[in-house]
Image (cartoon, rainbow, N blue to C red; front, side, top):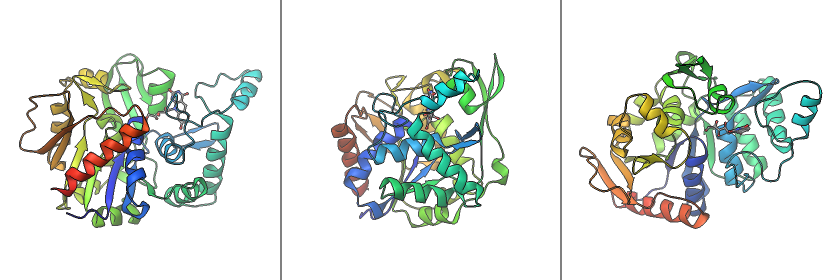
Length: 310
Ligand code: FO1
């Protein structure tokens, strides 16, 4: 099957790796990313969209290669100045990164939709594939924890270094969010839908919490495929495995596939995982580790060739 339009649901650093691989081999007009904004927050008055920025910085070659987020070679003079005033900032904003937040905040304050703002930022950074926020309205992820009560996402993730035990995850304001025309159109026209190897509970669930999102995806009779973020009972990076345990789930690729349920027609597991029971899903096993650009491109190519054969 010819794949002229691919939609990718995507979150943070892990997802952006596959995003880069896909962007390297697909024509830009064939590729649309629908990005998690549940991690977004307002900090010192600045609107921060970490997952969108991670993708934009990755696709434009600006990303800090060590952290996987933020801008390479950035400085922290603004934070140091705040500290000199007696403030205790806990979120690591680099000076170049702040330019993105300033521009975004001022455009939002002028009444632009987040979708329009991100399109402008993407153009400014030379990012050609479409990068769409999951919704224009804020849908903040709230984490109910055993030790610290309810935490906003970045408080949980950065301030508390994802150490508190997760009891439940909520998507604030989700009932007031809407499917943007751009997201609705991208899904309606997609020849295949890929769920990136992002954290299903923290990065993909907020996207699926946008009203009508799930229905719009389910309405499409095209391959809908997730790439596993779990390999041999472990997450490549971040708290996925820890959260799965805390939510009472087995840390396996099968649990991830089961979580997505009827949303999926197919599942890509890692070649190191054998004898998976993927309950009738079309599946393939590839090397899903993406330590360098060559592996990002290789996985994207294997995935697309497999999808074309569906
Ligand atoms: N992650 C951290 O672990 N510590 C930070 O101080 C931090 C700052 C930060 C600033 C801008 C940005 O776009 C991302 C940043 N991140 C930081 C990463 C971010 O918390 C995570 O990538 C996601 O929200 C999880 O997907």
